[in-house]
Length: 284
Image (tube, rainbow, N blue to C red):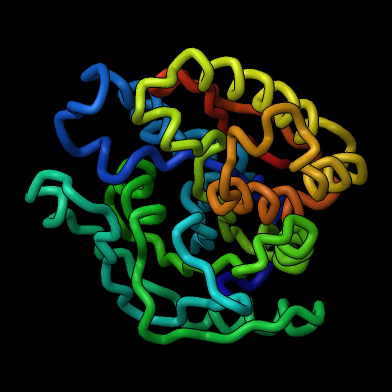
């Protein structure tokens, strides 16, 4: 493990927006120039918010980070066990300099083993991948959150089922890592109908995203038992399928809700991006 003793106050879990491609590191031309400024500023201060949750100055930073990104799916839960993960520039038609970004955070094979053991103990099929790298759902936001790239990161995949209850259970299996000064983060976007956003359907995106965001905030802030029931049935929410024609950018939230255990959830950030409301959530 990464720590020998448990924290008095387990770290919260976070579901964060990671923007659009390398949006924070370029001049944005697909909408107002300041489209991503508010989100960028919020991500830059998130490490300070995490620090305030720790129980001593000796834990000013997490010992390690586990990230579930919307951009990695596999048939079974797959754990990046590389000691030095490369970067995947899995975005297209952006300026050349955005393909030269660097984020040399180390991996953590020992933590990957611990994750595998916890999932296996919970009866969840899983495997390790010693060759996998960080996709942009990891390195783009963490270039802002922890720009020094000095904290080991283990990325874990979603499963191709995208089943919400399954991913809540995955989070529940990993909840104990919070007590070992390991930060659990889900990286996605709470509204992800890119067709509506990029074709100028701003007014419909606003109404749909507002309706879904209101429901999502209430669901996350419900008691843990109710929260898990609501999130498991998210497709019945107002404008759910308009907000997420495909749900891969929402499912990391389910993992973080599960890892939140009996701790209450809350919305901690809201923004309007290209006409749509997006939110971040914290559990614990």
